[in-house]
Structures are given as C-alpha cells and as structure tokens.
Image (cartoon, rainbow, N blue to C red; front, side, top):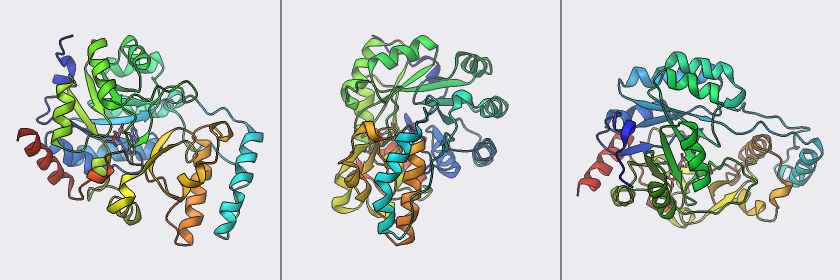
Length: 353
Ligand code: FMN
C-alpha cells in the first residue's frame, strides 16, 4: 500500500522525529527544543490538572512558535474493588514497614481519564494545539468531533492491528504503532485482553501494509539508524521516548538517570504492579518484588499507582531509590545524556549520514 503521509505532511517536519509525550518526564522546555529543531515536540498531560496542563501548553507556546502535540490518557475509569485494594495494601505492608512507614489506609483514583474530563477537553479546544494524541484508547466520539472541528490533528496509539483498525474507523489522522520494546505504559486499549506483544518492526510493517492512514513507529528507536529503519518500513516518522529521558530538559531525577549507565540499563521489565497497567521499567527492587505477584491481584489503573507512589516516597525518605517508576524501553543502553537540541542535531546528522 502506498503511504502518502497525507495530513501528517502538513506538519512539515524538518526531521521525522516525534519526541514521545512522557508524563512525569517530558517538559515544555523539551517539547519546544524538539519543535524548534524541526521535530514534533510533545507534552503529556494525562496526569495533570487542567490548570497545570494549560500552563504547560502556554509555556511551549512562549518558547516556540512551531507545531507541538499534547497527549491525554483515554483509559476506562477505574473499576473500584475495595476488597482487592485492601488485599493489595496488605501485600505491600511489609515493604512499607522496611522503610519505617505505614501503608495508606485506602487508595484513590489519582488521575481522571480524558473520557470524563470535560474541563480538560474544553481547555484543549481553547488552547488549540496543532496535534492531540491519545493513549490507552480513544476519546468519546463527541470529544473527537469537536477536536477535529477545531482543525486539530489527532494521533492514537495502537499495540496491535485490531486497535489500529478501531483508530482508523474512528477518524483519527495518524496511528502511533507502539511495539513491545517501548518504554513506559503500553497503550493497549484493554489491559486485560490477550496481548500479542508484537515488536516494533513487525507491528509497524503490519500496520503500514494494512491501514490507510499514516503510521509512526515507536519502541526501541534510539538513533538515526533506528529512525531510518522505521521509515524503511513505511512509517512517516519515529516516536522516541527513552532516548529523551536522559536529556538535560527531562524531569528524570539523578538516580533514574544514573540507571542508564552500565549494566542496569540492559534489563527492563514489563509490569503492571507499579501503576495498574502494563508498563516497561528498568529492573529495580520494585519490579523484582512484583515478579511474584499475579496480574489478577493488581487493582485498576491508576489506583495501584497511588500505592506505588506512596511506597516510592517511603523508600526515598530512607535513601532507597529502587522503588521508582523508572520507565525505559529496551533501547535504554543506547541513551545519550545531552541537551535536547544536541540530541535532535545528532539524530538529524545520523539520519542524513
Ligand atoms: N506515551 C504516552 O502516550 N503518554 C505518556 O504519558 C507516556 N509516558 C511515558 C513515559 C516514559 C518515561 C517513557 C519512556 C514512555 C512513555 N510513553 C508515554 C510511551 C511513549 O509514547 C512511546 O511509546 C515509547 O517511549 C516508545 O518507546 P521507547 O521508549 O523505546 O522510545
């Protein structure tokens, strides 16, 4: 199937790189630097309040007049299960105790899904970023109609061909094909359905051959060679997350950054025990603990994340940094600490070479 890139080409990128939206890690400064270098910068507001999200958008606009992407989470609202949540807290109690802390008495749904967040939707229509991207599923049809009527371009993540067909049928403009290698949360629509765990290479090629909208490849792409490979598979661009985690403008703390050096970078684990949804993290003490837990024990996203964040705070207070959500993809050993502008320049040179 011929790939024309259609509306994606209207973005007129000088370099076919999308900096992945990364809640808790990407910043307006990073997004602006990527956009100013000719890529598509992104901010992630899935875990933000409406006011904070608006402030982030306005900060990007102050730093760049170029196109950028704002990313939201479209997960189903958490199905609360007090018995399961209490059992999960009981399971975590010994871990809290190791750090002289108590587990919380109960848990909260710490982020509101975009599906029920009309204030976020209204704010986005007002701020009107050039691109809005969706992770964990699709927005409500009326939300999408209003976004499209504002002329905003839309992306959505697919982890398999079925999700890609749903994205195409919904009228989304571009698919982000997220392979199993990818760092951070897997964008699967239903985390409890069978996961075929397709790698980026196979998934990208399957989608560029089977859907008629543009495809962006994501997962394990760290340098110009990886971007070139994605383009060779028919993708219109590559979306890189892990490659930007160690950039100066990232919010990653010093201990998280340090894990990208040496042996600790070469081992990542897909786990749902940190947040409630499958996500790829650098192997650490939390992921090691999670290995003996079954998926069925884990409460819904993002309720589990409330417990995970509390445990990480308790551990950090005792100078133990092995319980953080240190999201990273399988390409982590290839991460290069530098400024975002320098990384973009490096990627452009490698791609041209
Ligand atoms: N994807 C989203 O759509 N929204 C997010 O908020 C988000 N947060 C992430 C946080 C981190 C630290 C990382 C590494 C990835 C995150 N992702 C998120 C996934 C990326 O969009 C992308 O699929 C992934 O980074 C690609 O794989 P790579 O990390 O190997 O480059």
